[in-house]
Image (cartoon, rainbow, N blue to C red; front, side, top):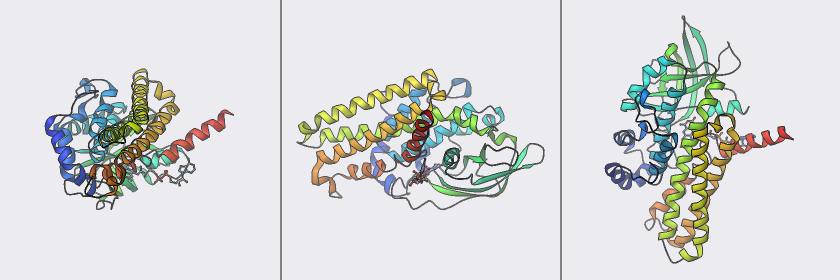
Length: 358
Ligand SMILES: Cc1cc2nc3c(=O)[nH]c(=O)nc-3n(C[C@H](O)[C@H](O)[C@H](O)COP(=O)(O)OP(=O)(O)OC[C@H]3O[C@@H](n4cnc5c(N)ncnc54)[C@H](O)[C@@H]3O)c2cc1C
């Protein structure tokens, strides 16, 4: 899909709604249906599992194309697509049979509440959800997921849970329609307000064996991580491209800034190629730090690109009604460093590894 255009209907909708999706939740119910109607969530999903097939990088490119117009929609697409990928890599066929057809049809929203798991693995905080055995193969689940996006009802959310049976977490899919699942009101976000982001309280929720995405959560997360992170990189690729295009178009400073614009564009292409090659070869499964570095570098290019847009625009960028796309992208870019795993977490992991290598 690289270089391809988005479907005209989706493009028109994104262009006319980008500002309001960032600033209000008014159109939040429409986000997932618009993306699903364009079929973007099926890209890169094996045909044998009901998807449209294609390469993994095609799914990254799809998120990048959406992010060129709206990071709110790109993040919703990431959530839905990442959950679909959890089902693709899960060794539990019952989980796939239970949710994949509905996710591919857009009848249910996929959400991923794994930031707690990422921090647990970095020894930054304990798991916040617990599960105890129930009946023969089921579990009772209680706890809290403080931040989850794409909670458009009905939804299913992935969470890492602590059990007494094993020291490492298990990863479960929890259907929002079950008794004991409570979604909060939308969080009062600075931006990305139509992303259906809320907290979830789990109060003795009974789940069956189909809910187990990964009994050995560590090995599951290692398998899921390359796509999880690569899809996130699509958000940075698209946002940076949009800012660079704007930086080129806005004004007379273009000549002064052009060398930096050209350099940033080249970096984006190099980093996209690194993602494509790493996904294709499977390298990121065993060499996660290579992907961490790509995400860190992409985040830096996003910051540079937004700065170039600002510097190309000058004072006009500060007038609320002159260049609203700049204001939106400035806010959207503030999300890139904190999306799980945050840049702080990634830098911490790389420092730990560098320390261990000495
Ligand atoms: C709009 C929005 C939507 C979100 N949606 C989701 C979602 O769908 N699913 C989900 O799971 N989460 C979601 N989140 C949560 C988000 O992923 C968290 O913000 C992210 O995990 C960063 O964690 P943090 O806030 O603790 O900050 P961090 O960046 O982790 O760091 C905060 C502090 O912790 C310390 N720290 C971090 N790492 C280290 C380290 N290695 N060593 C030492 N100290 C360290 C630092 O001192 C830092 O000051 C969302 C957040 C936002 C804003």
